[in-house]
Image (cartoon, rainbow, N blue to C red):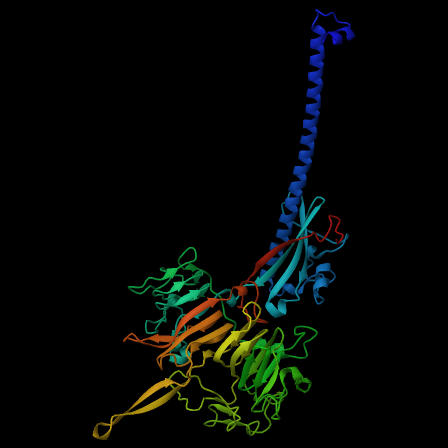
Length: 600
């Protein structure tokens, strides 16, 4: 210290200079700290602004998705519009997009392209989006990439949008009564909350029933001690929202653990629009890859190797055109005719399952000029015979490959569906591999187990314009009891099939009628009907009957929702008359455009 004092010219006894040095040192340190603090504060302000822009750009990207959803809600065909030159659209093969009648600034691309502004945003936020409609025809989904911009920051998200529909529910009905076509009570085609007659028996969910997925009815549910594991909604406008018989204790597992109100979901008038998917003259517009059309009763049996065997003796043309002469019969649908390995032969045609496409089975036409109009009044071949004039049919009678409906020994009971020699009925069973939808102008019959080879990959739709039946034929059995003077006979109705229980993997839809077990009220217990997928129907179809003696007829229900239906659908499956689009999944991706609009 003394040495320092000497250098500063301060006497050893004088401490004033030392104090000055200390004060100056402290002042310098304080200046450095203040400067550092200001630097940190200023950089923090810059970083905060950048963070706000970063978050704002993502919010703008989500705003773009919401804005596109609103356009789809107003116009369900809006998925056909977009900028076909947008990078995301080009990469997905969505080359048929067109500009909308009213310009949409969100379809802009490039540095000179437009952006749509988020209303009321400060600082100004904007977005643009690109459309991928390549999967719409197969699974009903639309994918968009939306890019948000705030200042010099851009961020992008990809969203899958799916139209709400019948497959959003494991179980859907319009009316909770049996089909009036079966009961002969047309006055029962009325919702309970609209004042349906008490003479219309309402079907209930019974004790032991398990509904493992979301359920909705436009009508009022009647529920005993059944278990619902998914959300339950109803369009009942009265209270209570459901009918609970005395002594019953239903269980609702999903929140809010009771049924809730939901607006009505309207059935389309028919499935006739699905027939359009077999047109070969719309490849440049609506149907780039036509499916297969079969005519009259058709039997389809799936095998786990991705094949299907098809018997369809009335079929002449499997892909049709507005000009009948342009209709065709490609090998991919099976070759018509009665030769070996053809559609009209006893052994049928074995072909590949259609990739992501539709089979439609139509009634035998009667209009002149139809490419499938029969030539003459007889049957299409000697291998095909009708039973009782026009009720029921047999293919290849007398051979080892007989296919017959009604089955040999089958009896007709009250409520049994008629088998028509010229009806557009499809009879289906087997182990399915692939993605396909089968639609029938009349009935769909599930004649045995119908299951996926791979439950994570395979997907199947069954759409009957009329009923979808679980085939359950009955026979009459006469037994002689005793002998001599006390001998007598008894006659019983028993199942013609020897199997018990039935499993179906599919999205099932009966547009105008019902999903029901044939002869559900005869023959004793048949085990459990397991459906993994979804069931939608106009009228409630019974599958079993509880008897007063404690026994039962038909099947118990074990329904399980295929959770994949929340984000995808069987190819070209029908949707309600009016529905909205919801986002099934989001994914954050690298920004598609810079703030200048240049593609990255």
